[in-house]
Length: 74
Image (tube, rainbow, N blue to C red; front, side):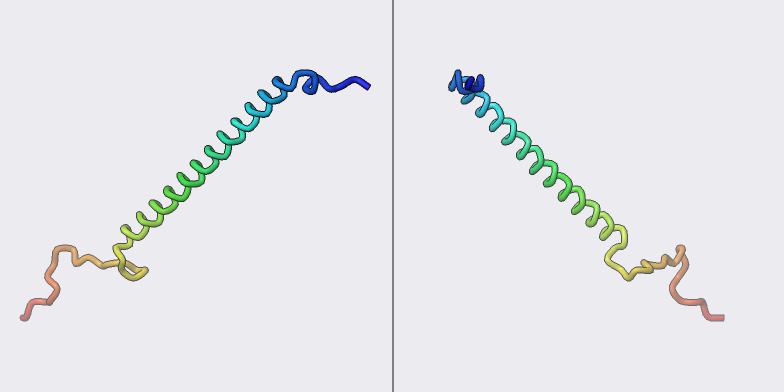
């Protein structure tokens, strides 16, 4: 029964294993980085929404249009 090629040269098999391991480590790091970036982006988006509403009620503030708050007496 013939042996598989990678068993004929154990150093070749070891180098293939190291290359595959390094590739998996790079992929895992890239996934962690993309998840972290997505989380930061989501957090920034939520903060922007909070700033836009000004921390007021859902209806928001009503501006006075430059007029006084009280009506002038006759």
